[in-house]
Image (tube, rainbow, N blue to C red; front, side, top):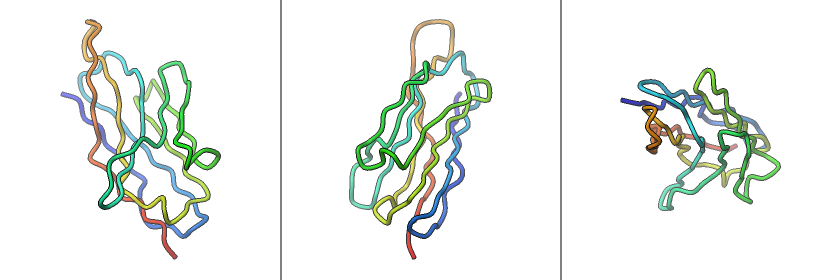
Length: 121
Protein backbone atom coordinates (compact mmCIF):
# COMPACT_ATOMS: atom_id res chain seq x y z
CA UNK A 1 0.00 0.00 0.00
CA UNK A 2 1.28 3.44 -0.95
CA UNK A 3 0.21 6.72 0.60
CA UNK A 4 0.91 10.30 -0.41
CA UNK A 5 0.55 13.03 2.17
CA UNK A 6 0.62 16.73 1.30
CA UNK A 7 1.36 19.63 3.59
CA UNK A 8 1.99 23.35 3.37
CA UNK A 9 -1.31 24.75 2.17
CA UNK A 10 -3.06 27.68 3.79
CA UNK A 11 -4.22 31.26 3.44
CA UNK A 12 -1.85 33.80 1.90
CA UNK A 13 -2.20 37.34 0.62
CA UNK A 14 -1.76 38.14 -3.07
CA UNK A 15 1.91 38.39 -3.90
CA UNK A 16 2.84 36.00 -1.13
CA UNK A 17 4.50 32.60 -1.21
CA UNK A 18 3.77 29.06 -0.07
CA UNK A 19 5.71 25.83 -0.31
CA UNK A 20 3.82 22.58 -0.67
CA UNK A 21 5.37 19.25 0.22
CA UNK A 22 4.33 15.70 -0.63
CA UNK A 23 5.74 12.60 1.05
CA UNK A 24 5.28 9.08 -0.26
CA UNK A 25 5.35 6.06 2.01
CA UNK A 26 4.65 2.36 1.78
CA UNK A 27 5.77 -0.34 -0.61
CA UNK A 28 7.83 1.65 -3.13
CA UNK A 29 10.46 0.25 -5.48
CA UNK A 30 10.98 3.45 -7.46
CA UNK A 31 9.20 6.68 -8.28
CA UNK A 32 8.95 7.87 -11.85
CA UNK A 33 7.25 11.18 -12.51
CA UNK A 34 5.91 13.42 -9.80
CA UNK A 35 3.31 16.09 -10.34
CA UNK A 36 1.11 18.71 -8.77
CA UNK A 37 -2.45 19.34 -9.92
CA UNK A 38 -5.09 21.75 -8.71
CA UNK A 39 -8.86 21.92 -8.75
CA UNK A 40 -10.84 25.07 -8.19
CA UNK A 41 -14.56 24.93 -7.26
CA UNK A 42 -16.67 23.93 -10.23
CA UNK A 43 -13.65 23.23 -12.42
CA UNK A 44 -11.74 20.16 -13.52
CA UNK A 45 -8.45 19.06 -12.04
CA UNK A 46 -5.60 20.58 -14.04
CA UNK A 47 -1.87 19.98 -14.20
CA UNK A 48 0.20 22.65 -12.47
CA UNK A 49 3.70 21.19 -12.76
CA UNK A 50 5.47 17.88 -13.16
CA UNK A 51 8.99 16.56 -12.94
CA UNK A 52 10.44 13.39 -14.43
CA UNK A 53 12.78 10.99 -12.68
CA UNK A 54 15.58 12.70 -14.59
CA UNK A 55 14.61 16.13 -13.35
CA UNK A 56 12.94 17.49 -16.47
CA UNK A 57 10.16 19.88 -15.54
CA UNK A 58 6.98 21.07 -17.22
CA UNK A 59 4.62 23.83 -16.10
CA UNK A 60 1.18 25.13 -16.91
CA UNK A 61 1.46 28.45 -18.74
CA UNK A 62 -0.40 30.21 -15.93
CA UNK A 63 2.32 29.42 -13.37
CA UNK A 64 5.51 29.62 -15.44
CA UNK A 65 8.04 31.90 -13.80
CA UNK A 66 6.20 31.84 -10.47
CA UNK A 67 6.10 28.18 -9.40
CA UNK A 68 8.97 25.71 -9.12
CA UNK A 69 8.66 21.96 -8.74
CA UNK A 70 11.46 19.87 -7.25
CA UNK A 71 11.99 16.43 -5.81
CA UNK A 72 14.06 14.55 -3.25
CA UNK A 73 14.36 10.95 -4.39
CA UNK A 74 15.98 9.72 -1.17
CA UNK A 75 13.21 11.11 1.00
CA UNK A 76 10.52 10.23 -1.57
CA UNK A 77 9.24 13.79 -1.59
CA UNK A 78 8.14 16.40 -4.06
CA UNK A 79 7.87 20.13 -3.49
CA UNK A 80 6.02 23.00 -5.12
CA UNK A 81 7.40 26.44 -4.37
CA UNK A 82 4.73 29.00 -5.21
CA UNK A 83 5.71 32.67 -5.45
CA UNK A 84 3.83 35.79 -6.51
CA UNK A 85 0.56 34.09 -5.72
CA UNK A 86 -2.63 35.42 -7.26
CA UNK A 87 -6.28 34.99 -6.23
CA UNK A 88 -6.80 32.80 -9.28
CA UNK A 89 -4.31 30.31 -7.81
CA UNK A 90 -6.88 29.49 -5.15
CA UNK A 91 -7.68 25.78 -5.36
CA UNK A 92 -7.17 22.41 -3.76
CA UNK A 93 -3.70 21.21 -4.73
CA UNK A 94 -3.12 17.49 -5.21
CA UNK A 95 0.16 15.63 -5.26
CA UNK A 96 0.53 12.83 -7.81
CA UNK A 97 3.25 10.23 -8.29
CA UNK A 98 3.84 7.43 -10.78
CA UNK A 99 5.24 4.61 -8.68
CA UNK A 100 6.71 1.22 -9.34
CA UNK A 101 5.96 -0.93 -6.30
CA UNK A 102 8.00 -4.04 -7.25
CA UNK A 103 10.97 -4.80 -9.57
CA UNK A 104 8.42 -5.66 -12.26
CA UNK A 105 8.17 -2.76 -14.75
CA UNK A 106 4.59 -1.91 -13.89
CA UNK A 107 3.68 1.51 -12.55
CA UNK A 108 0.65 2.87 -10.80
CA UNK A 109 -0.66 6.38 -10.32
CA UNK A 110 -1.21 7.58 -6.76
CA UNK A 111 -2.80 10.75 -5.42
CA UNK A 112 -2.63 12.64 -2.19
CA UNK A 113 -5.72 13.82 -0.35
CA UNK A 114 -5.26 17.44 -1.38
CA UNK A 115 -4.35 20.61 0.45
CA UNK A 116 -6.26 23.89 0.25
CA UNK A 117 -4.49 27.00 -0.99
CA UNK A 118 -6.39 30.26 -0.65
CA UNK A 119 -5.00 33.52 -1.97
CA UNK A 120 -6.96 36.45 -0.63
CA UNK A 121 -6.49 39.81 1.03
